[in-house]
Amino acid sequence: MERRETADRSRPGEDVALSRWDLDGERYYSFGRYLREQFPFRVRKIGLDAGFTCPNRDGTRGVGGCTFCNNESFSENSGRGAPPSLARQVADGITFYRSRFRAEKFFLYYQAYTNTYAPADRLRAIYGEGLEAGGDDVVGLSIGTRPDCVPDPVLDLVASYSDRYQVWIEYGIQTRNRAALDLMNRGHHWEEFEDAIRRTRLRAPAVRICAHLILGCPGDGPDDALGTVRDVTELGVDGVKLHHLYVSPRTVLARQYERGEVRLLSLEEYVALAADALEELSPRCVVQRLVGDLAGPMVVAPLWGLTRTAIYTRIIGELRRRGTRQGSRFFG
Image 1 (cartoon, rainbow, N blue to C red):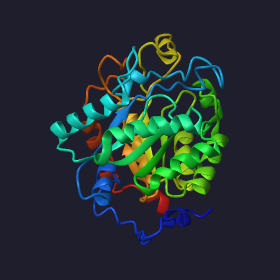
Image 2 (image 1 turned 135 degrees about the vertical axis):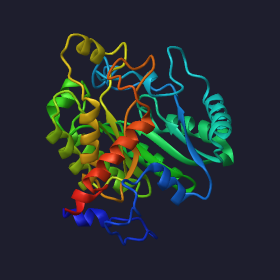
Image 3 (image 1 turned 30 degrees about the vertical axis):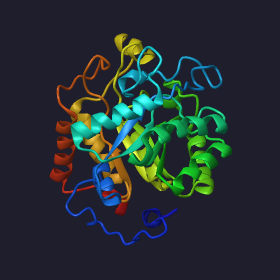
């Protein structure tokens, strides 16, 4: 596949014209900009915990989960006890984001664990509960899952929501490196991700696809990380979330880190690698996130002492210093 062909893949009604200057002076295509282009009102995501588990925890694919996984560190409604009802989570999220950010409409983000890991009928009830609670305030649906947990009936169900909502499915892949995936106990490999992309495009063509990638995975070097970004770009995903590898308490990764078995990227290394990754991405690809969690009780390391905004600023500054932007290497 030629890289230029990937750049020109579009949905019906989209303008396919694209040049290296389409970012209008911005260094990357942020999710905030994307939402402003898509909707005439302020939109925020509400993260939800619907009580799912994971095939990598219950023995179907493995036990113990991924070495880095602690859902409390990134899912706002996850804790040690049972999550509140979906109706309560949605209502509380709407109240919070309206008050704090003047949000007007919302995406429901089924976030914690594997949110397609149930029969389609059960999923229909779970998604429906959240959407009914949000009513007309909801304009979008995002579903976080694994690439090995989307059988065809589930993809058909997800596709059915695209008539009323903007729908995203978010696949965690992290890296293409088979050895690194095994080190992290992911329980799947790149081939499952490619298959999930292919079948999603076939059965749910209106659904947008976001890939989660970790820069600095155990066993990954910079070439592996950038190779993953290039491969994800070639598959034509609509968005990416880039994260740095961070250590959460009560995880296998935390024990490995304490024993000195895991090396984490320094701030300077991450800024440079994130800038490299952005240069490889198609300018059409929406960057939903550029860094993982940074501080608080759910982060053991690295402790860089900066806010997310400050790190975004450093990454943008690095691109500006180079005179590059998202897609510079894509156009090559």
